[in-house]
Amino acid sequence: MNPEAKKLVLRMFSYGLSVVTARHGEDVVASTVTWQMQCSFDPPLVAVAIKRSTRTFDVVKAAGTFAINVVGAGQQEIASMFFRHVSAEAGKIGGIPFTPGVTGAPILSGLPGYVECQVVEWVDRGDHPVFVAEVIEAGVQNNLLPLVLRDTGWNYGG
Image (cartoon, rainbow, N blue to C red; front, side):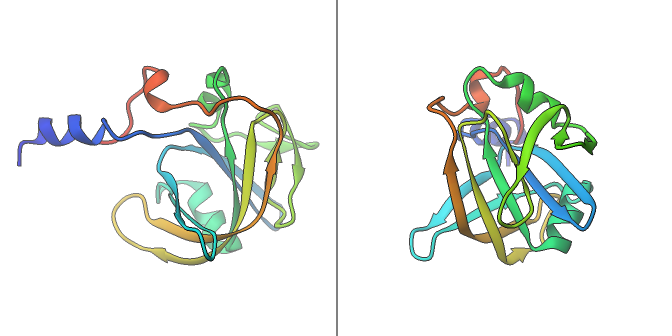
């Protein structure tokens, strides 16, 4: 396989930016992800790949629930913030206010929308295992268009 061609073609895939949040006990986490998708209408299922070496992976695995908070166009700074560990305190994570959802996962204020999910299974392969989860709650917070990875000048994948 031509490794450069593989990288270029995989980077042609359209990726949106979202922040996965989760809570297990007092442990509250948030990480920006690019590899998420809807994968079933009935039941409503999504899949998200989370880097194995992160606290977010550990917390999602332990909690069995998470939220996907969609980042909007013009909110690149928010997406950038959650590429590293940020602490939660006093109703904020990384300085962004949140409210706990029905799963306890933080719902970040000001982002276009979110889904809360219950993990139904996970695929333990590679450096980004995939969690498949049923959508159990959803909300729209504003009408911003989603932020797309290619519009940021960032690359992830390949």
